[in-house]
Image (cartoon, rainbow, N blue to C red; front, side, top):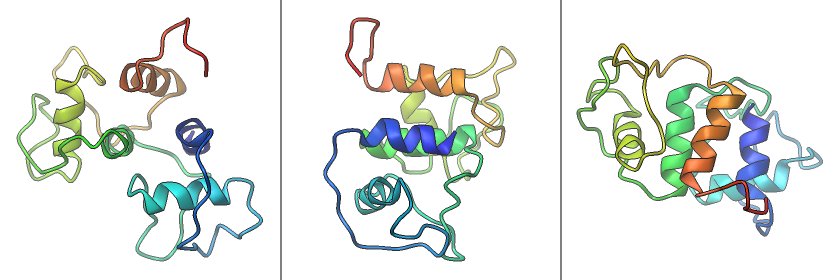
Length: 138
């Protein structure tokens, strides 16, 4: 799923090189796109120097990446969701993305930030975030 996000968000962007990760060699098929997003502040690696391109993306991480790419307010704040408190690292982006109509929660009032974002959920988030319609060219 993470690769899908990186590829989608980077299509057509120029390549920039600044940083490397121990698990992303320069010959990796997404190396340039990952580095571009790192340099733009959209994504970051782990504290152990890895990126985990094949890893699972949580709903909170999806909100953060989309929020950063759209330059939404990421400052910690209270949210409309019962399970995303102001102290949560994704609270600002989650609330901003909600207010922008990009994300929604579940009927019980939760967002489930630590659950894996599904392909369908990510498609909805991206279509809303980047105003993609059936007529839009991807």
